[in-house]
Length: 266
Image: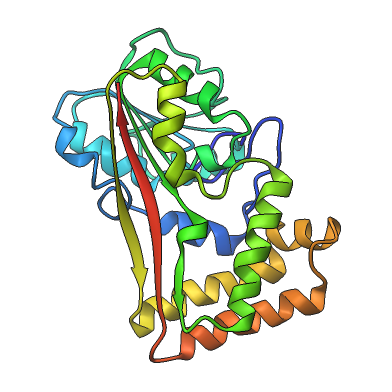
C-alpha cells in the first residue's frame, strides 16, 4: 500500500486514505488491543520493525516491551510518519517501502505488521521480504467478510457489499485474515502458527465512536471519493449508509464483531 497500517501501496491507492475519521481509528490501536498474540514472544533487548506503523501508537507500545532493544516504525506516508515521530524519541520512524526494506538480512528479531497485507497487491512478495530481515514475522489482518453486525439493517448490508467492491477496486484483499496461512506458505515460511481474535463494539461509548467514525468515513474520506468516482455508489447511497451507521450506534441492541486472522511465522 504504500506501507501500512495506515498507508497505501506504492503502486496502488489506500482504500481509506488519511481522513481524520480514519486516523482516529488508527490512533486507538495499542499493542494490547491489536497485537496481543505477539506480546508473549517479546522480551527486553529484542529488536523490532513495525511495517506500516501509521501514527505509531502500536509501535511505541512494542518499543516499551523490547526496551532497551531497537524499535523502528516504517510507513510509506511521510505525513503519517511525521505524526508518529511526535510521540517521542524511543522509536526511530522512517518512510519506506514494504516490498523493499532498507535493512540487512536478519537485522531484526521481529517484523510486525497490523492490517497491512490487506492493502498490498503482492502480499506474498511482501511477506518474503519481511522474513528476509527478521527471525519472526507477526501479522494481524482483518477479514471483512466475517464481520458480524446486529441489527443488520439494509443500509449496513449495503455498506458490507460496497466495502468489498471499493477495496477490491483499489488494491488488495479485504478478506486477508483467512489467507495468512496460505500466503505465508507461498512465501516459503517453514514454521507457521495461525490464530484469530476479535474486536467487539457493543457498549454505548464504543458504538458511538465506531459508528460515528464510519458514518463520517463513508461520506468524507478517500473511501467515499473512490466509491463515487468509480461509479460504485451515489452520494445519496453513501448518505443512506452513513445514516445507517448512526442508527446502529444509537441502538441499545447494537453489537459488532470484527474478526482478525493472526500469523506468527519463521
